[in-house]
Length: 115
Image (cartoon, rainbow, N blue to C red; front, top):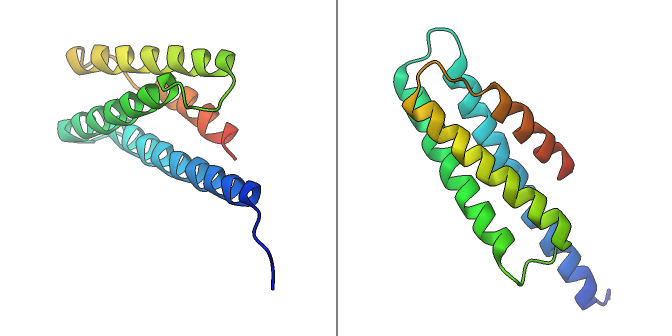
């Protein structure tokens, strides 16, 4: 019989959390890409903005939690990125000519860093 160590359980939990974050970022990226596709309905942009805003609000709140185990410098960088993304989303919401390309690039880089 295999004995499960507490450290193994924590590592598994962290891997599951990273996988969920990666999946959420994948969904955000997909929605943003669909919104910029030629012929995309206006509702696609609204859905992409709503989902991505909610996602980054949750991520920033989690990063600001003192119990978050990431190094402080990394948390600060990710919070800054999150705030920038939220501002860019608001700008895109109010300016139809503003695209999502930069947000997509940054989101992909962060997603890829989770694997």
